Image 1: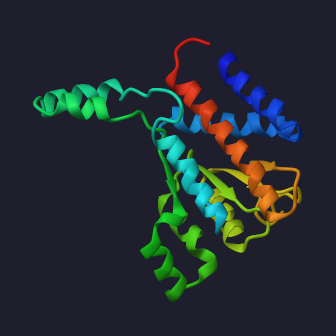
Image 2: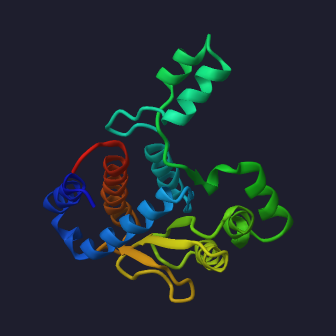
Length: 217
């Protein structure tokens, strides 16, 4: 971890001292995500209700610039210049570096079809059975830690060879699910858990952006 990246984490703890209890878990989650992106893999994110919105929020921060400029990678730039010389400058100047991530709740047609035709508790597990590859990471969000569709998603992600990060409340994630890293914030009431989830995932996104899109330490 770069020194400047570690400063981002320390800043979160200074603003939210109650989250210092998950310092080790934050570093572990960051480590899994760095390996995932460095090895050309992908992150999937899921949740229900407000947590589904959080999942989409996370993807938005990863897939485009958050606070830093993210130039498009050199290989893509070279390919665009070679294939589309007249449009290349516009394309290159308006694209941003992305950390590949996908929010599973966004697949409205697939989710509603599977809910209607098969089993509502399997809406995320079904997608992961098709998408997940060994080396990918699932970020599963459940304020209670007991959401059935989230537990099943974690189980299938693990069975597919992926790594898992759960974002939950003080009770932690159900033991039925298993999770490589559990980020359990120190609250139990849903809206209070969600209030802590925001700085946690914002900080992880800031750390990742800093790690991949800045030079030096």
